[in-house]
Length: 162
Image (cartoon, rainbow, N blue to C red; front, side, top):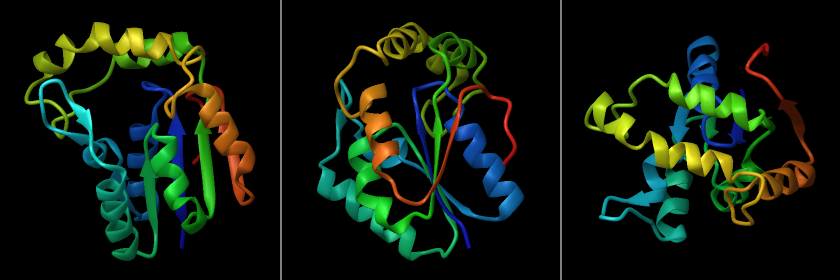
């Protein structure tokens, strides 16, 4: 039984690693992007209570799982149920390169073209990781990592063993 949280900057490889773990270890997978936002223009965050209820339903549905995202507020909600943290603390330049090379994410965008139209905004977001002071920031991620008492790892490159 594995219950893993993966977090880091946008483009750090959270989804890729989560999918590797899903395949290699047979764990259920939850991408927090799927429940953190309300589909509106512009998009806005869903109420935390709604997101937390969805997370609770997910973790009750499987003994082994991996949850990934950059939302420290949502990760804090589920931290007590997790037995392992993986913090992807890659250099910003690597996250930008990963974002540029990202495959189409059909659960987020209707087409690869629509995804690529968002690339400039995403790169700007990635660049602000160190200077932001919100729940998506490097400082919030580092504090979350430091406060977790279970098994934990930090990866500073995409070269890793799962």
